[in-house]
Structure formats: C-alpha cells, structure tokens
Image 1 (cartoon, rainbow, N blue to C red):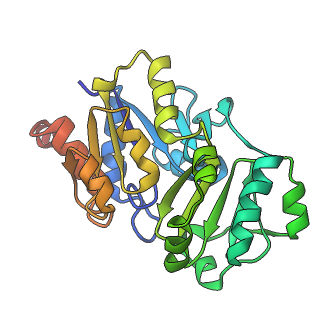
Image 2 (cartoon, rainbow, N blue to C red; image 1 turned 90 degrees about the vertical axis):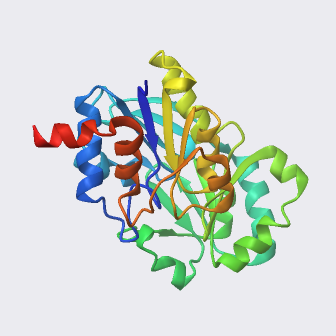
Length: 276
C-alpha cells in the first residue's frame, strides 16, 4: 500500500504555463483526505513553492516539502526547517571559477535571493522565472559569498550540453551535478538530493521503500527513483528517466500526475467515489 507520494513540480505537476490543472489539484486533495502523505519535491526555493502548497492544501505542519533539489527539508507551512545543506565559500569559488571559463550565465541561490552577474535574455523570459527579481552583482561579490544553497548554470541547451560533457572528474566527485531542465545544470552539495530527502522523511514517518511512489521528469528526479518501489515518469520525460521508471504516465500537459495516481492508487474506485 502506498503511504507517501513525492511529486516534482516543473515538467511534472505543473504544465508548460506553470499552472496546476483542476484534475491534478482534485486528486492531490483526495490523497490528503485519505491520509496519504504528499511531498512536493522541487529544485525551487521554498518562497517559490509556498503558493503552490497553499493551492493544494499542503501548507500545514503535518506535511513536508523538499526544496533546492533536496538541499532543504521543511515542514510545509514553513514553520521549521528540518535539514538544510549549503555550498561553502571554497566550493562556490571552485564552481564559479570553472563556469567562468565558458562565459556562460549562472545564478547563485541563497535563501530567498537569486544572484547573477548577467542573464541570457532568452533564459530570463522563461516561464519558470516569471516574477523573479534577480539581484545583479559582481563576480567578486559572488566569490566572497560565505555559503549558497546551489548554483545553477542557466543558458542555451547547446551550452549546457557542451559543459556537461566536459565536466572534470574532480568536480563530478565533489558535487551533486544534475540537469533539472534542458536549460539548467545545477551544482548542489555532494550529500544533497531529492532521493536522500525523501528517504529522510520516510524514515521519520516509518514508511518503507515499498510504500513510496515518486513522480518526476528530469535527471534531478532520478535519485527519488532509487528510494521508491513505484517509479513514475512523465511522457515528456527524458529517456534516462523513462528507462528507470516502472510506469510511464501522460505528459504534464495531459494531467499526467492525475492519470498516474488514479491508475496506480485508485483504479475503478476513483469513479465510484466520484459518483458518491
């Protein structure tokens, strides 16, 4: 029996306009009513997840939220941070010194602020950045930051491909480096991942791997697949995600989260409950 469902946001629960469909809202609220723990697991910071939690009725102290791709675990009402991991100043310098070789765009995330020295205009127009106020600063200021939640390389897909294919071994071994969208390559603390965060929450709730279901679409969701028996990939997922899944649902434009939960959790009981 599934007792915990971890769900990614961008490319999974949210459509391409960054909206949650009526069906997705409806079935998550039913899960809550049926005492199934729903955990939103996102690469976003908490302040960019809060309104979504409110819309889903998940913004309470008896629910959990995973942000920064596992770098932070909080009570979903924001009242308490249970665990948080950071990049140190030396790690920040290592990452930025590597990225500056490519003259690419990157953003440093620290708490509720997103710092950048420059932003690719095409990237700035992406829906995921809607309403974001970047803090423009100098390279020296970034190199002096004492800690950060993560650093994101945010640029054209071709640039991301080039850099990802030429990551030096010492960098790969020192950090958790994952692609979260075709335009984002994220540099996280080594011991930071969505999978480790979900494992921590499950242990706290005495939930086993057999009782966990995860739904995702990108490389940063793969670690969740490693701690769950039921692994769901979106139809819009990258191939390596689909190959690691044991169920492929519809796309994020076709209520894929709703379809997966209805099929795997409720089956025919969903229609019966609706009629009642």
